[in-house]
Amino acid sequence: GTPFRREAWLIPSPQPGILMRATLFRPAGTGPFPLAIINHGSVEDPDQRALARLPQFPELTAWLVGRGYAVLVPERPGHGKTRGRYSESEGACGSPDFLSAGNATADDIAAVIGFAAKQPLFRPRGMLIIGNSAGGWGALALASRNPKTVAAIIGFAIGRGGRQHDLANNNCGPDRLVATAATYGRTARVPTRWLSAKNDTYFSPKLSARLAEAYAAGGGKVEYHLLPPIGREGHALIAAPAAVWQDYLARFLASLRQ
Image 1 (cartoon, rainbow, N blue to C red):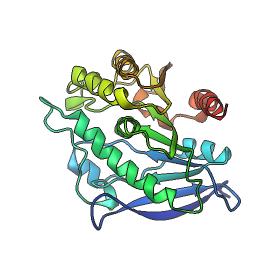
Image 2 (image 1 turned 90 degrees about the horizontal axis):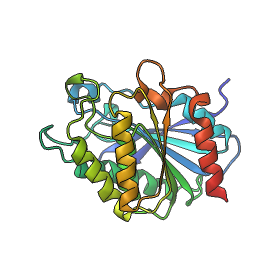
Image 3 (image 1 turned 180 degrees about the vertical axis):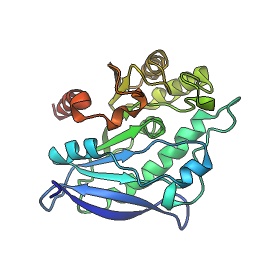
């Protein structure tokens, strides 16, 4: 049998009448549980987004549930069966607006947080926000707002505008992305941990390191780790076996409890 219970949830989005489909994974017991929210990545292609399946992160979810967390995995508007308007677009590749794109993602994540904070099943504080790729970028935008309910943010393969025309290491506007990371970092005081793999062709090691440095230079609290190559594409780091990333997460969570 499955080691945890799974429930389908519907969560109000910032768009009137649009409910985010979400899956809740919960440990045994009645709670209230500490909550982790895992936020998926995104693509600009509307056909791909429409076909997106409900996001699942089985390795990460099982690891968190095994440590007593309830895990909520929402599907944001403009994706899959949640439908609704896609508010997270970065715009034309020649002049991408990474700031607005990240803030729109953060608005959706904030809606999930606000809803979850009212549920007796979860502890209203000490939430862990996890983001993959564009979801991680949105989590940085959220960090710049310092939500009181959030204890920490973990980002896997953070960024936006990667692999334009499906070319490796071809970012839409790397300098603009770095400048935006610094903007988010200026007001963010939530502890963050960033994990990237050496063979991520969406955000190269050089670019991901620049992003972390810019975020920290702005004042953001970041610890960045570059992990060895994972499979054929390091951008899928979040889906790698727990053995690959668990030590970094375990140390981070332990540091929060001190």
